[in-house]
Image (cartoon, rainbow, N blue to C red; front, side, top):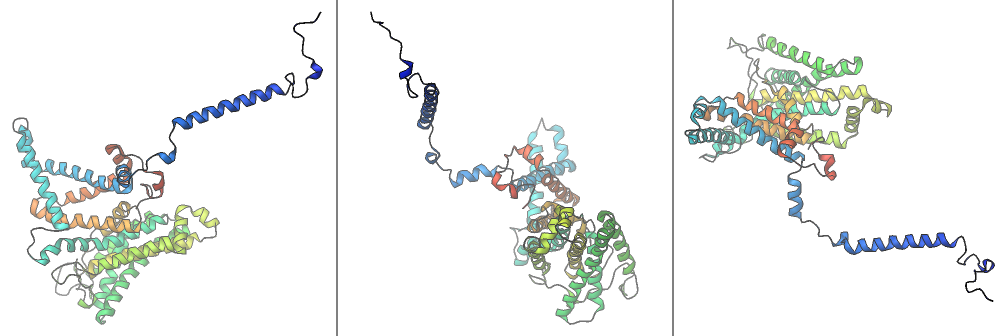
Length: 452
């Protein structure tokens, strides 16, 4: 009698048979691969490929990045914030307009109209005094605002470059004021003591100004390099020395104006004065062209020359630069000499240009200290410094008209300058106020931390 369910013959089952121990794992692996393949095909069927996605237009990319936390946007919004805060200060400081807010609930139009009139006229005069006056009837009157702006800008470019160059080398040059003072002293002495022909006289006077600043920069540079003395302390002390030296020198025989009893020197000869750009009726002079050339030269030095590479390397990490074979001592001295020469050139323009023709205790004004603000505002980049100096020059030129025509205190212009620097120096604050998006990763090298 036969068995209806015979058991399979195990001897007949080979390695490929159903009873092979290798068959079950192979079947599980095939099942897993099949499941994965089905899943991938399903995702491919439901998800559009990257090639099928529409490419964003140029206008869309512009709008997406317009409200990003890049340097241009932050700088522009910092100006807006400074003007808003400045407008509030104008309203608070004007007693007539401020009185209208006492009854603002009864007649709000008085407060609104008074505030708008005050602020709009002030900023309009700021523009008319620094850029262009639409009501000008003559060519000189039309060019006068930009001429004044360029006159104030030229020395600030030099002192700003002086501070920025030292910053890039890892040194904090607070002595631009003193270096500019020594520059104006030697430029003036060369201008009225040396009897030279016109072209040569101007060249010698300008070089004398650069030499005075370079010598005053060499002192803290060599002290820093040889003894490790902090450049901030040295430059601050040298600022005082230069100011008192100027005050003493003015009243000395041969220097003081023989026809005056107050502290003023002889006038610089006409042969040593910088030529004017737009004629005798306007104050802008060739110094602004020299400032542009100096900006280009510093940019080339930092970005194209071997010395500039060493300067930036020492500024980034002196120990690593020394290990790489660079002379940190030599670099520190050269940084301060070049920085001093730039500040000296800026100082020389205060007496060789159209600002003044003789030495006085206040001839240098505050261009050295303003150069620190200009360097910070320009992110210690040469062309950024030049643009920042242009902005400060415009504020100074427009502030004079704003004070004369609107009765706004000139000190308010200084407040505006300080507010601009504060907001630009705090990009996180501007980003938080305006809810700016982060800058694109492709722009990290030109983002807020890197500057212009």
